Length: 160
Image (cartoon, rainbow, N blue to C red):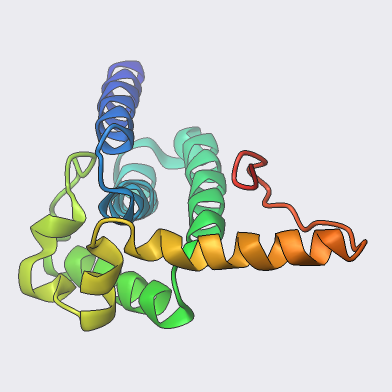
């Protein structure tokens, strides 16, 4: 179990660094959502029930927390339709490839026709999903000047 956990940790970290270093924030967000969500699905559906049992329960707990964090960030910039379509694409991909247990290097662009939804294609474009956030920050600055308390994202760095 230790070797597999170390391999997962190495692959997931390498994938996350690679995603974070991309110059395209829309694609990076979608890829990070894919990375975290597919890994949680695989651990819940394969590693825990078929290999490690309750010994890996902490891993699933950690992945659920990471998944909640990245989807909360996505809620700041993706529309509800985009988020639901991505969830549907992820579930459809996992149902189509239930035997895939190493998913850290799967990217949104690997989904092919499954991911060809107009709203998700819009989100992939460079900077497209950040425009919504910029509008929200501008509204926030206006409300701050009126004396109301600023809203903050749980990640802190978002509202610079």
